[in-house]
Image (tube, rainbow, N blue to C red):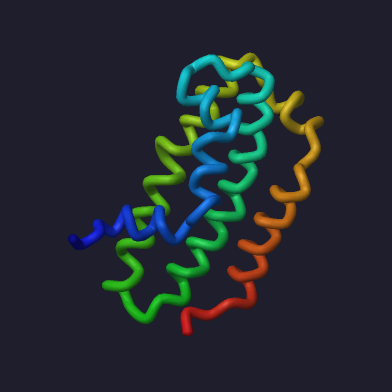
Length: 128
């Protein structure tokens, strides 16, 4: 019997898959009973990736071979800077988390590392 692509990905992830889907954050998020402060902290860190990702995607668009290769990236860039960005803003309003509060919360090490990696690749990387 042939495995589907998603079944192949799940098998390749191994135990990591189970750790992710059974993690407290994931199960509470799925049940809808995650602590609001935990969710707020997560959303703040996740939103900080958005800027670095926009820089990375824009650099990939700029380095693409031609217009045909740039258009899908441009469309995706428009998508994530539109409703994706307002998603975060709407969540922050719902959670009562203004810009001042967000500015006082430091980046987690993983946030800094991942954002720095995306920015470094965008400045130094090539599309091969």
